[in-house]
Length: 223
Figure 1 (cartoon, rainbow, N blue to C red):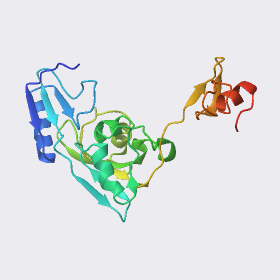
Figure 2: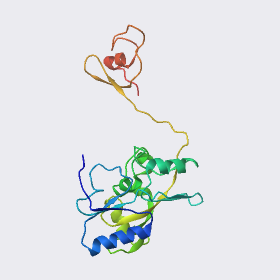
Figure 3: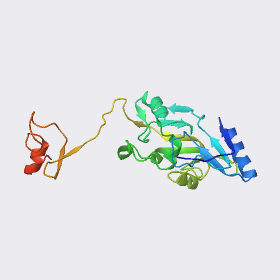
């Protein structure tokens, strides 16, 4: 699906590696791409003839239960983060797939199962540590470099390389109820508004038993 050939892949393990990689790319005028947890299918984590800063080995997670916050590095996936936070009945509103990296999803806004209750992932982002194109290491939040913080919350990874995310934790679980609500099509082609349930008994044809198909056809709909 993606066929790009970088000249060099730097497997960063800390902030110093990221700063060095940015400085080398800038000094030599080389294209720089950034790989977080490697879930994205658009190919932006790779480049032809340039340098890839691979952050997948930066997987540190630290919870502050008193402040109800968590810090995580860009190589962390949502599965990694959920495992640590759910030990305390907490979560960060993330995505839908556990193998998605926290970095790309957060920088793109972040929509998932908890969005309707707690907002987008970027709404729960409190601060970031970021290496900018000039090699500077900054902390961005609502109180520090607020314009930069505004941009990265949904603006993508074009403002620098983030080495740490700080999120607000939310009370969720560890036991949750989840699933799909499905609706059936009546035999006459009209759609029922009632949730899909078994028909009234063996041998009942669709729309003729005691299930939702009969109620939909007769105009008796549940509230």
